[in-house]
Amino acid sequence: MAETLNGELWYWRDVICDLETQGGIGGVNIDKMSASRHFFAGRTKKNTWFHVLWEKNVSVVISVSHEEPALINAFGKVFEYLPFCRYISENGLLTFEWSKDAADAEKRFAELQEMGAMELQRV
Image 1 (cartoon, one colour):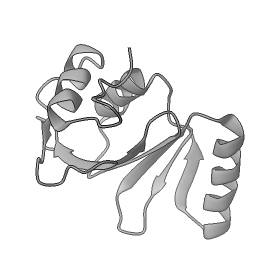
Image 2 (cartoon, helix red, strand yellow; image 1 turned 135 degrees about the horizontal axis):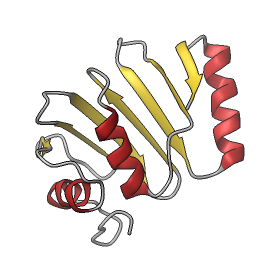
Image 3 (cartoon, helix red, strand yellow; image 1 turned 90 degrees about the vertical axis):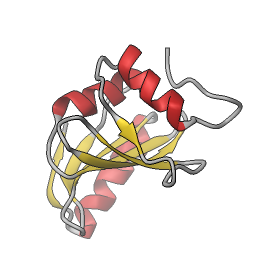
Image 4 (cartoon, helix red, strand yellow; image 1 turned 90 degrees about the horizontal axis):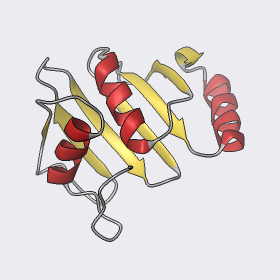
């Protein structure tokens, strides 16, 4: 089904609804004050903090305070494609990246390797 958009915007209420109805994960809260055109932050009922940098049908970067596979899987179901890699970001957060285009994913993976991303691996 994909993201429920209003024009080009994915409102925080719709993020919560999409994650629950499409992704199968309930109890997600979005920080309304963090939400902007291509960014939002939130927390799961398991107290996993996350932030999402998103551009529809192009790329997604999600960083989480600790690993919660159900959250990553739920976003994958909503976006209708899965992450291509994971690594530990410079600020110590577990980070997953998605790219709709396989060539872009390969290029980005090579960039992350050159940058020396910690614990970089394909998923």
